[in-house]
Amino acid sequence: MKKLIIVTGLIILASCGAVKHKSAQPAGQQDLPARAAEERSGQLAGAPVGKQDDPAPASEAPASLAAAEDQDHLILATLWYQKSAEMRALYYQCFRTAEIALAENLAWAGRTKPAAVVLDIDETLLDNSPFQGWQVFEKKEYNDEDWLRWVELVRAEPLPGAVEFTRYADSLGVEVFYVSNRTVQEMGPTIANMSTLGFVNADSTHMFLKENTSSKVARRALIEKDYEIILLVGDNLADHNGLYEKRGPDNGYSAVDADRKLFGTRYIVLPNPMYGNWLNEIMRQSSGTTSREKLLRLLETF
Ligand SMILES: [Mg+2]
Image (cartoon, rainbow, N blue to C red; front, side, top):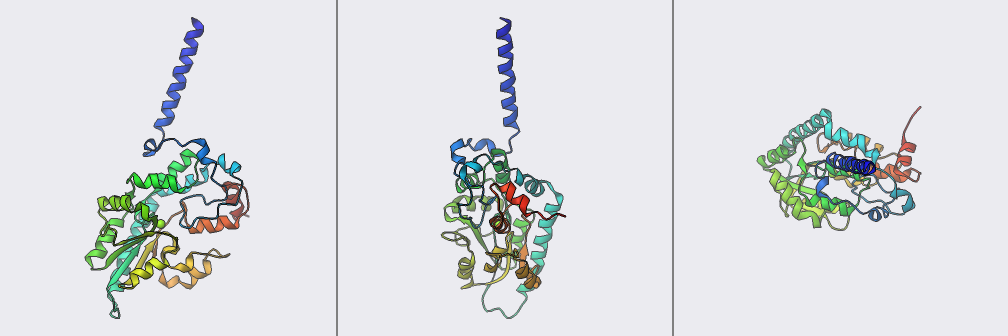
């Protein structure tokens, strides 16, 4: 009898532990069913560590090594994005600068076509950092299937100053376009999410999503047939110019230096420490079997 009481007590304690663990999960995770372990086995340690605009070749490391790899390297960047007042201030600062630049560029008299502004969506207008947090909790690298499930939840929040900027541009008569590497299959939930939040022109005629290629050059050219793009806003330099799609051994530094007068005037760059071409490029250049190993080898120290 005494033995039975002890065993029952242990079972109750174990159950409480499980409940406590579940309640500590981030918002949104409860709606996403637990992933089978075998689904993770296809992920590669050599792949980029976050959501990617330009997927890397999936052949850099044995899958068996990646299966056990956590995503803890995303924690600090994600927390900064979610919790720092500095991040919030930077978004306000960027969109305020965007307003000033837009008004100045609009005043230029030499234009022959109507003016347009082109904005990226993810980590420019919509905050997907809960998806990054989910990756950490689930120990899963980015993959399209999980990303689609997040998008279909239609739960992304607007970034500080973003909705207001699109309304300001619209009030000046500047046509607002969205050029994003969300896929065309994600058009429905993306429009639903953005229109609910109050973004202007959240419709399929103003949204140029990814069909075959991550490059945004051809999609911007489509807009330029009828409009003059007077400002581009994004968290990835490839949102501004195709030149930045491939960075080269200097990480794109020389190209940025050459373009220095365009930042704050024609290009508005928002902060994203969690993922992007900046990270994909350096990860490809680094050696190692896990993301952590690759990242550590990239660090400069003394
Ligand atoms: Mg983006």
